[in-house]
Length: 118
Image (cartoon, rainbow, N blue to C red; front, side):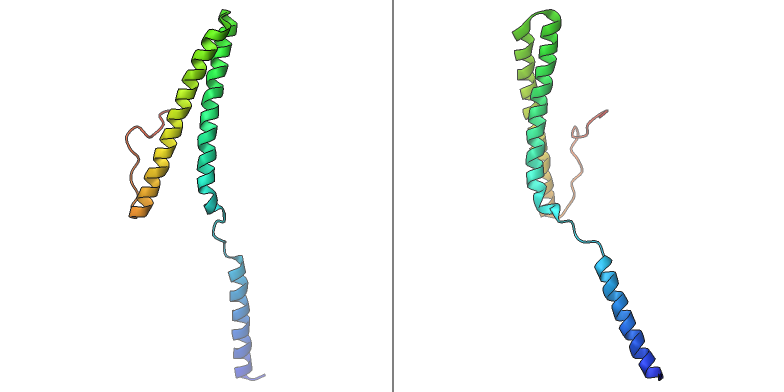
Protein backbone atom coordinates (compact mmCIF):
# COMPACT_ATOMS: atom_id res chain seq x y z
CA UNK A 1 0.00 0.00 0.00
CA UNK A 2 1.48 3.29 -1.05
CA UNK A 3 1.44 6.56 0.81
CA UNK A 4 -0.98 8.05 -1.70
CA UNK A 5 -3.47 5.17 -1.19
CA UNK A 6 -3.37 5.74 2.57
CA UNK A 7 -4.04 9.45 2.10
CA UNK A 8 -7.03 8.68 -0.13
CA UNK A 9 -8.37 6.22 2.43
CA UNK A 10 -7.83 8.78 5.18
CA UNK A 11 -9.70 11.44 3.19
CA UNK A 12 -12.55 9.00 2.53
CA UNK A 13 -12.69 8.12 6.24
CA UNK A 14 -12.72 11.81 7.21
CA UNK A 15 -15.57 12.43 4.77
CA UNK A 16 -17.58 9.55 6.29
CA UNK A 17 -16.95 10.87 9.80
CA UNK A 18 -18.04 14.37 8.80
CA UNK A 19 -21.24 13.05 7.22
CA UNK A 20 -21.99 10.95 10.32
CA UNK A 21 -21.48 14.00 12.55
CA UNK A 22 -23.81 15.99 10.33
CA UNK A 23 -26.60 13.48 10.98
CA UNK A 24 -26.19 13.89 14.75
CA UNK A 25 -26.40 17.69 14.80
CA UNK A 26 -29.49 19.05 16.57
CA UNK A 27 -32.34 19.93 14.30
CA UNK A 28 -34.02 23.36 14.49
CA UNK A 29 -37.20 23.45 16.53
CA UNK A 30 -40.13 22.37 14.41
CA UNK A 31 -42.84 23.82 16.65
CA UNK A 32 -42.07 27.49 15.96
CA UNK A 33 -45.07 27.82 13.67
CA UNK A 34 -47.37 26.85 16.56
CA UNK A 35 -46.50 29.86 18.69
CA UNK A 36 -49.61 31.84 17.69
CA UNK A 37 -51.89 28.90 18.47
CA UNK A 38 -50.13 28.37 21.78
CA UNK A 39 -50.68 32.00 22.72
CA UNK A 40 -54.36 31.74 21.76
CA UNK A 41 -54.79 28.65 23.95
CA UNK A 42 -52.96 30.39 26.77
CA UNK A 43 -55.40 33.30 26.63
CA UNK A 44 -58.44 30.98 26.49
CA UNK A 45 -57.16 29.02 29.48
CA UNK A 46 -56.56 32.24 31.42
CA UNK A 47 -60.14 33.34 30.78
CA UNK A 48 -61.65 29.98 31.71
CA UNK A 49 -59.45 29.75 34.82
CA UNK A 50 -60.62 33.19 35.97
CA UNK A 51 -64.25 32.18 35.47
CA UNK A 52 -63.75 28.85 37.22
CA UNK A 53 -61.96 30.29 40.21
CA UNK A 54 -64.53 33.06 40.59
CA UNK A 55 -67.41 30.58 40.32
CA UNK A 56 -65.82 28.23 42.85
CA UNK A 57 -65.15 30.96 45.37
CA UNK A 58 -68.66 32.38 45.00
CA UNK A 59 -70.34 29.00 45.26
CA UNK A 60 -68.24 28.12 48.30
CA UNK A 61 -69.18 31.34 50.06
CA UNK A 62 -72.84 30.84 49.17
CA UNK A 63 -72.85 27.32 50.61
CA UNK A 64 -71.14 28.51 53.81
CA UNK A 65 -73.40 31.54 54.27
CA UNK A 66 -76.63 30.09 52.83
CA UNK A 67 -77.07 32.79 50.17
CA UNK A 68 -76.94 30.55 47.12
CA UNK A 69 -77.09 32.84 44.05
CA UNK A 70 -75.65 36.06 45.46
CA UNK A 71 -71.90 35.47 45.85
CA UNK A 72 -71.79 32.96 43.00
CA UNK A 73 -72.96 35.57 40.47
CA UNK A 74 -70.78 38.31 41.97
CA UNK A 75 -67.57 36.27 42.04
CA UNK A 76 -68.24 34.81 38.58
CA UNK A 77 -68.38 38.34 37.19
CA UNK A 78 -65.21 39.27 39.09
CA UNK A 79 -63.53 36.13 37.72
CA UNK A 80 -64.58 37.09 34.21
CA UNK A 81 -63.09 40.57 34.68
CA UNK A 82 -59.85 39.09 36.04
CA UNK A 83 -59.65 36.63 33.14
CA UNK A 84 -60.17 39.37 30.56
CA UNK A 85 -57.56 41.57 32.25
CA UNK A 86 -55.06 38.69 32.19
CA UNK A 87 -55.86 37.99 28.53
CA UNK A 88 -55.24 41.62 27.64
CA UNK A 89 -51.93 41.56 29.50
CA UNK A 90 -50.88 38.46 27.54
CA UNK A 91 -51.90 40.08 24.25
CA UNK A 92 -49.91 43.22 25.11
CA UNK A 93 -46.90 41.08 26.02
CA UNK A 94 -47.14 39.21 22.71
CA UNK A 95 -47.50 42.46 20.75
CA UNK A 96 -44.52 44.07 22.53
CA UNK A 97 -42.39 41.00 21.80
CA UNK A 98 -43.37 41.05 18.12
CA UNK A 99 -42.60 44.76 17.80
CA UNK A 100 -39.24 44.28 19.54
CA UNK A 101 -38.37 41.40 17.20
CA UNK A 102 -39.25 43.49 14.18
CA UNK A 103 -37.16 46.38 15.46
CA UNK A 104 -34.27 44.03 16.15
CA UNK A 105 -33.94 44.90 19.79
CA UNK A 106 -34.98 43.34 23.06
CA UNK A 107 -37.00 45.62 25.30
CA UNK A 108 -36.80 45.28 29.07
CA UNK A 109 -40.08 44.34 30.75
CA UNK A 110 -42.26 47.26 31.79
CA UNK A 111 -42.66 48.15 35.43
CA UNK A 112 -45.52 46.11 36.82
CA UNK A 113 -45.20 43.27 34.30
CA UNK A 114 -43.22 41.18 36.77
CA UNK A 115 -45.39 38.99 38.94
CA UNK A 116 -44.56 39.55 42.58
CA UNK A 117 -44.46 36.46 44.74
CA UNK A 118 -45.67 34.09 42.04
